[in-house]
Image (tube, rainbow, N blue to C red; front, top):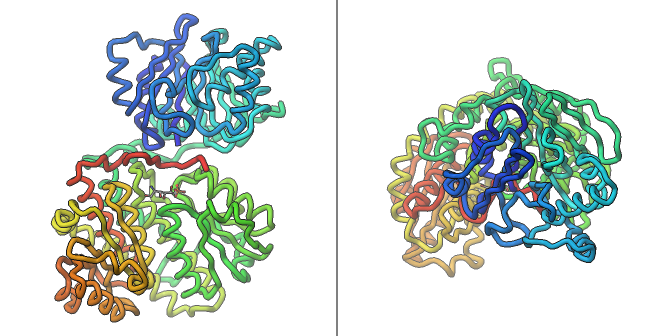
Length: 613
Ligand code: M6R
């Protein structure tokens, strides 16, 4: 939610900052801006819209300078326009600031600052912070870093910020609390960014700032870090494992399509080193320390948002079905505010692709306060959630850039299946023979996903029948129910068609009223323990002239006969079936969005990483 990037060194900053913004654009894309420091002057370029619009605007301008910073915005306070775009300047024009997060007490601060003569240009909370820094600096005659430190002591809320000043052209000051910030250490140059993607092509050495830390990067090669309470911190340098190719489209038209087609690999990667069917072995190294807690857990609570919440629903089926542990699934945003009953022997599992979702982070903090053990299932290595949880398992899906989650979802489900099997086997809920059978099936999944992807051409055909609809209904039972929800979310977020996911049996309790000849009904009718029941639900739709788009298991004859359109997928145990049946739904959504000429990778109003509540 908002991307920030900054550079200081000997090179021209603008190309680095612009490229960085393009990599961070998944975080927000309603306006963008850049500040460049040159000869004691800050040159500011801002534009409503995409980074490309900013580039067009700056095309014939002087964009030179070896210190610069940029911002791509997802609006919270103030509509998306040029004035509200970051960077924001102090009243005297000497300080510029970019910000990701929300300054919650901005209104009170603004009133005080206005009474002292500060005049504001924008409707943003961010502009208040840069005026506050100016006020504190000039009143107390402080250097920039100290003025930032004291100012941050007065704000409440979440932030990742970078600040520059014409008075100190050889430094940039960054800080974080609740929003991510990584510092890149190059040779005689430094970078700061919301994540490592703008940095990776220049250096692999990074420091992830912790909450309430302030970093000063100095053109002369010095990095110093302090806490807001003025304690020095020794930078903990880590090496990035990411490769630059993972951030490119690799010949695909969109990141989403690339990520859909990466799934045989990403699913394989999320099992690598964890299972071995020939030995009947399963290891969850990251969870080992909490083995006993998990084995003895009376209850598991899974918290997440969006697509990760759908993975959590799959986990509920898995943990109860295989491991026989009562499991509850919660929207993180509801859980954190509804005073939930949490016991010390509860295990809370937080699922997140980005590892930065504010609501999920808050749910984790609440669970920790109540004494529960909190485990994370995250994709982005080094992000906030893996650092906030007691232990966890990475999904290893690689960077997911498309805003609509695809490969991160199947990697989450793969990890959750392994967790369920690991717990089930160690608790004695399944025996060795059963475990080995599941492991053999799990190892076969990447090849089956590869086969499923061959349905891409059929997905195009089905998409033509759905693209002009205003609504769509997705139905599934058992393990297919969360996939129906996920299919509906994929369609609505990238093609803006209103879609609902339902347990197929629930349809008769209301949604059936919507069905007529114009309603596409996408039914997950793969062979599972509830197949016959699903067949009956299809009949109910057909009796009301609904159009059936069925996902069926290869070899099926019954549903194929009834369906108007169908896609066949390989057979697999139903506990693993979400990994297969989600694939055609991803492809259908992608193709529908293309037909409707929607921006597949950057759907309107959305952002990849939701770091505000
Ligand atoms: O990074 P997270 O997994 O925590 O993100 C949660 C949701 O914001 C995310 O899944 C969102 O729903 C995606 N746009 C779904 O495609």
